[in-house]
Image (cartoon, rainbow, N blue to C red; front, side, top):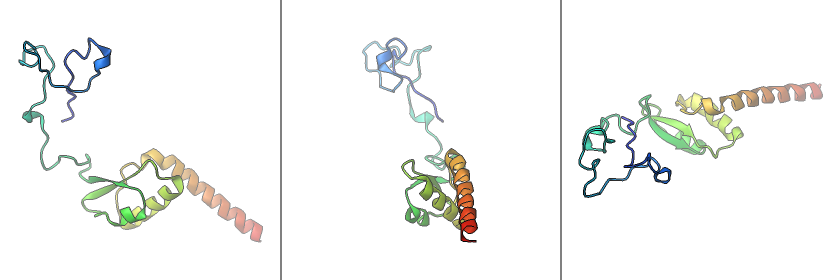
Length: 134
């Protein structure tokens, strides 16, 4: 469950923010679990142990920086998420290799437009080179 627990008096002072802090006041209504106050985290809000820390698709999320990281993945239980610091050229090679290894890539949509443009640019360049050679 992705319940957001809110800090006491978060709406009264903007500087407090929504980040969770345990209320410790002697007469705090929230600490005493009075109705009408925001709820506090407790053991009952935990998620199932089998599905905890897994992607909704059921795979374990692993961040990939290069092809060596990709080779180490188990395609049955783990899925790749390409790091944001990886450039387009390397992303393109990682995606091609992942398809060969049948590894699922979780953040493919975020850079799919760039990949399509790279593929079209690569085919255009190869056609231009063949025209120049003839």
